[in-house]
Length: 367
Image 1 (cartoon, rainbow, N blue to C red):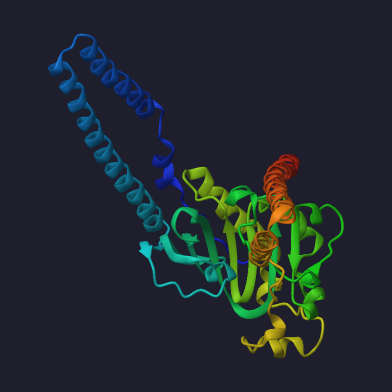
Image 2 (cartoon, helix red, strand yellow):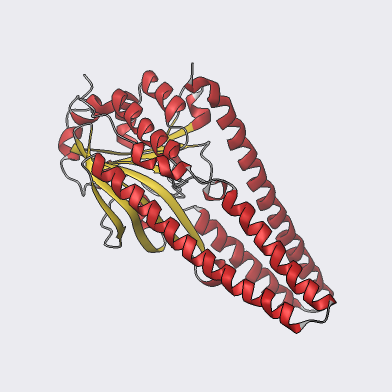
């Protein structure tokens, strides 16, 4: 039986939808007007007119900074009011991050923003924006995602439901972590086209018990745009895009509600373990047999191997010298070009594939 759910009041977020094109149109006209003044001053050889134009640029920058500040205050006020009317706690910023989800072990510069804390389906939850940085300097990438975190009353085996259709994050999974293929559970029907399921080797039946056919259908209808992770007593929903309007917030909360409506009893109270001793093992959070294992042949390893190959190849060319060295360097250069083209093509194909699958799921949600 589904636990009671208190209706959520989204009305404070109405103001997030009031962004019209007037500001953009005004900015375009303002810029055109300023450049017109400066250009006119140049034609007329009038320094005074040109100075008016340059002064206008400073005024425009001031207006932009002021309006951005006001919009940021209004945005935060709407988010805070959203928490107040629903009897939640709200915090604008948090850096003290102590989370067990695998996403929180990635990168550096980790921080949380717009943090909601409350109760959903009688379970403690947090809903927040999370960002982290991969790399340094010019090559660094900043990842922004939205997280819905639930605290369950008991520990469960580590499971990942990886969406194969989500948008954002450079056409890759919100969870850019490569797990050992031996832990991937083969699924029947259409589900395997849209999600990949991972569970520890001894918990395959448990994972399939949680993800019964009705749950799979719900995921395809309502939660195809996010990844889901269950680890110890936590359940995480990860979206690659941060909500910017009322509808986006509603869709995310609806996704959580729909999934919990189908899985809550199994996750909180039912006997879902395939063998008698699995429940005992689960009571020991540090036991490695209930955790997913990362594959050693992951994206980091592949990149390192490719760099080592290029270094050795160019080094060999330098040592050989003469015509043989030229041939080795040429082959290495061709390999580098082919690798770059292959990466670009895979990026385009992956994006097209995900878009096509998302389009295929549109009608399913309303069926």
